[in-house]
Length: 308
Image (cartoon, rainbow, N blue to C red; front, side, top):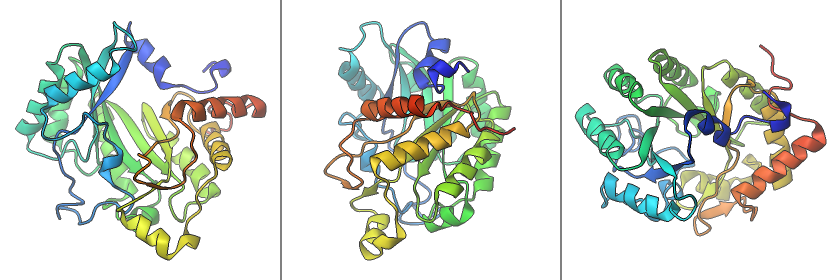
């Protein structure tokens, strides 16, 4: 990696695959979650309120096609020649009957100017029969399967009621990559019980997985979640980063990641009306600019302390 770039970003990765600008459009395809319907558990992960994920055009009373068309209109002013990736984001987008899944994915790909899929899911919801289908699909179109790993520590996963172990994530990632499918991972930094040392160890553990992309974001306390109630009762159990603390932990983390991993983002912005804390008042692009500025000040780059 060229150190002048500091880290591998998503725009550079997409530019290697497409000769035009590409934008993800989020879709709520009406799926649920096995951690909510009793298949794995009830109540969902303690931090989760799915309303934080979805733009205004994402509603289950609209078809996949309608959501994509409205998303295209939303982004149309940016670049007239822009193309789109259909991002199945809300809940668990591989949790359903195979024919239902295929119908929704193929409906998305039939929409004009949609040039690929990003499918967000849980690592315990990927059957071999679905992987067989996705393997064929990946030969025809751009495809990333994005797994919510969240943590590499089983005690943390139990504490947040995740409903699976890290070994399940490892298995899902490897089975998917073996089919020739790109895989993304999602991690939350700052979960209860995970201090700086644990997080830096986590960066090394994740670097051993054959991930193509990685998303990081800060722990956010959201109204209506079990974690919000836990925080109200025992705030001393949580460390909510200030923006400057979080910038430094992100850079420490980046320095220990495998140099070829593509880093999609470092923060998430939940709707103001749902967010309890931390409320930094910093937009995503502003945060990224701060990270880059601080990396230059620290002479930091992705993989600086990465150990094979």
